[in-house]
Length: 508
Ligand code: XMP
Image (tube, rainbow, N blue to C red; front, side, top):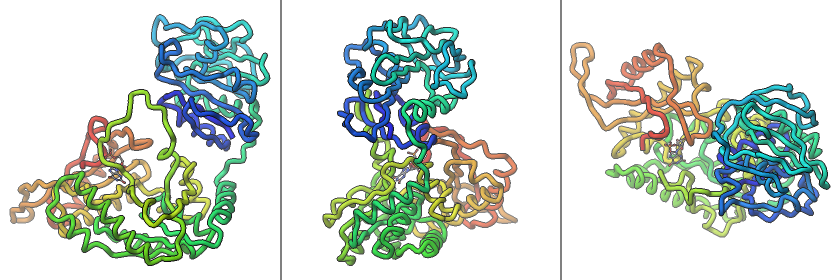
């Protein structure tokens, strides 16, 4: 495997994803993590970029010389500057900051640039630059504005490379090839990290870990929990006890449809209809964070009660994925809570269960590939994300059974129309929001006074930032008509054209 040491760059995860795409397994650690360099599985190390300058007083440091004694090393941006500095080169503030597109000119051929044309587009984002390389280093590439865009040092026990640009970002057109060359040609990694090999290895490891014991797990109908449960079920069959709770704020027919899918997948899942108690506890509450807390707590109560009935359980299955657990280097201090925690916490503490998290090292796109490999239906795998508190945070203000029904119907027409128009897969997430606003309309000869519905659709990569989807006017016209004509209680439809930031994806 490959280790990526993070110095706090916003792009670190992209390096990992590029490695995984080359079918090479890698893990991210903060730069100060003590690596077990004796571990023969570690075939190379990549050093990330950083918001720091190597000349800052508090600049993160690393013993690159010791590292290079053990394995090949490649530094990206800050990583490259740090390597140059440690070996006696000179790094200074550039006369001008360099951001964005640049043309890379290769001046010395190297296996790192196999299959890379002599000139290609790269993406820069730095304000320091390497003014002078250490004497034992060789220059590999330049751009118009900087004298050192890539270098190597082959005098040590293992090669050391440095890249001033960011090969991991999309706009570095040959970046993936360069990263693959480093992993495969220089570190000698096999390209055996594939969905099929992951499934085989994971199922074997789960069998070993769980033995003849039992696992309980909460399922949500989402991609992660479904894929995780399917893997566990492959390993232990019906000794997996899944629990799927109807909290009353699921989409229309979701409870029945999802249970039917679990059934075809051969998963042993019990559906619990808890709608009534959720409605009772939510009644009269309008505060978004309080609604989230009520739902989170009730969910744990309901799950706990059911779980206690499964006396033989020793493990708790969870669909945790890699971005949830990467220990990141925080440069700006702890980030502020904008909305309360997205995942339901508190489960692992109950009943002294040991955790089983088969997706703990996967990125979302890898979870999807593994899901397809497992034969999970495409509609399930390519679903939009759906928040844990469900429609409760898409009904602004207090929640009643009637409002839920109204929103379920409207949402159903919206999503169906997106699919009919072939737009569903082009947006990252879509949903309808019921506003606590009534307005006047006219239908036939009658005056109406009914609710307003907002439609939201966004494009995004990870939900952290998002743009509103530029859905075609004819689609918007169609869907507005469909909803107003078919959903009694809504007489006005509006489309949300806010990006995140400054807005968020959900309205609450
Ligand atoms: P925001 O609204 O923060 O949403 O831009 C980003 C992503 O997170 C989802 N989301 C939630 N998911 N519990 C969840 O499980 C929550 O309380 C929650 N709030 C927002 C949202 O649907 C989007 O995908």
